[in-house]
Image (cartoon, rainbow, N blue to C red; front, side):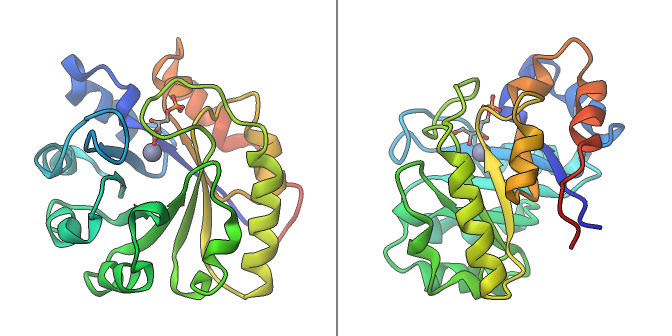
Amino acid sequence: MRKHIVAPSVLAADFTRLAEEIEMVNNSEADWFHLDVMDGRFVPNITFGMFIVEAIGKMARKPLDVHLMIVEPEKYIEAFRKAGAHVITVHAEACPHLHRTVHKIRETGAMAGVALNPHTPVQVLENIIEDIDLVCLMSVNPGFGGQKFIYNSLPKTRKLREMIDAANSRALIEIDGGVGMQNAESLLQAGADVLVAGSSVFGAGDPPATIRALKAFQPVFDF
Ligand code: DX5
Ligand code: ZN
């Protein structure tokens, strides 16, 4: 049976207690760490770069899923790989030569992800879907945690699932933004493989229990 991945987004963690927060994820049922890199250019916010990714990687006992919300991401692929990234996701909107960039990521040995903003149709990936390991559908406008889930992301997930299955691609579908207990099941039923959850996990009274609950949902379809 297809089992989904839960990736807590460290952006919502308490950075004054980062070591404890990482340890909480290490000891939970979570699968990956989701790390949001923002440059103040592609998105209107600045977070952290490879220095912090590397520091988190030293403590993390689970793969690092690095989401690059930056312009010219191709310049930094090797640096993030060296910093410990297992998945490197770039935005289609930031890559005029997406095919080249995706292959550059794969050459480093990392999984290659492509993220789409809410307004970007899944069809832009039609001719590259077989080269991608993960598609990250942004279900909020990237830049900040704690925003409201954009409902259209559900039919968009279904459409992407159809495209991936028709192409026999192994790309995972990741949903990022406003994901929590209220929509996790519908997203899995629509074909999601990876649930990114920031504020719904770190803002919960009992984060490990919330992670466990997000993991416990079952998709309707068996593959
Ligand atoms: C938004 C980031 C998300 C964010 C999700 O730009 O890419 O990963 O941290 O946070 P929540 O789950 O709080 O919407
Ligand atoms: Zn993200």
